Amino acid sequence: MRALVAVLAIAGVVALGIFGPHWLMSEDVAEADQGTVECDLLNTTCHWAQKGKNWHARLQKSGVQAQGTEYHLTVKTDGNQPRMLAVLRGESMYLGEYPVPMTKAGMSPDGEGQLWEARFTAPFCTTDPDMIWRIDLQAGMDQAFAMPVKLTFVAKGRA
Image 1 (cartoon, helix red, strand yellow):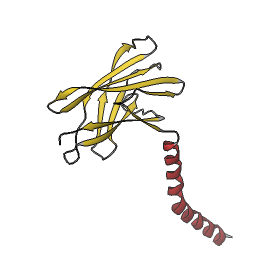
Image 2 (cartoon, one colour):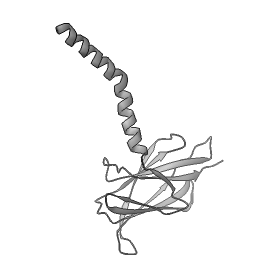
Image 3 (cartoon, one colour):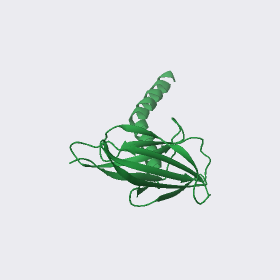
Image 4 (cartoon, helix red, strand yellow):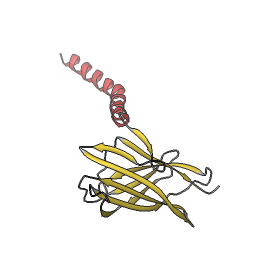
């Protein structure tokens, strides 16, 4: 009886070692990709609903500085957020993660939600002048949203 239990325990550990990581990763990937839509922030206002709250995001070029193009990010939500952070991540190639603190700009002009703003300059790659960046929103430093939309834009670097 002990031999049978030992063999079953060893077989279970081996099966978990072989199939466990694949099973865990497939759940995460399927959940992360399910329903995610890409939205180009520079060419359109991105709209989405999340947990019963409406969100709108827009990115505009503010001008060219010595460090590169300055961008103005505007996020409107009817949710009550105590604080917001935008995290800039390389989408076409990894150039790091850059936190962009957002400031509460009060109520939106239409009076239907909070308005958040941030100004930033996206780093550029010296080998490829066009870089695709993704912006992920967070409520503070450690609470990321599981956003159903991927906010991206193409930053033009120096050629």
